[in-house]
Image (tube, rainbow, N blue to C red):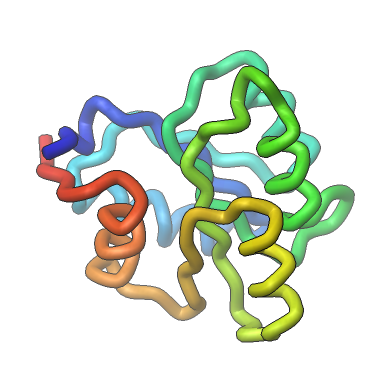
Length: 131
């Protein structure tokens, strides 16, 4: 079982409200190391300076979308194995297939619940326990 408090999570979404909702849900689950950025470019900058266990990224963002971020992460020798959950409000089959081909670990649909977020994280890392 993995301790939520020992894991670091990066939230990538251009909407401040979504980042806040995700952060609140993660805190309820026992996560304490949670950072947030507005797009894929900021995410890459953050990831290169801060080791991270899990990225939860929106698909639709300006500058660099979630799929481009996923591809950049997977192409990296240093951050390529980071867990990656794609957050999306659209259940577009083509997007899902592209993300799977690019190496996404799981998907989380908007709107989400704390319970659905936990199950997606556990599908990637196995059971997690709170602080």
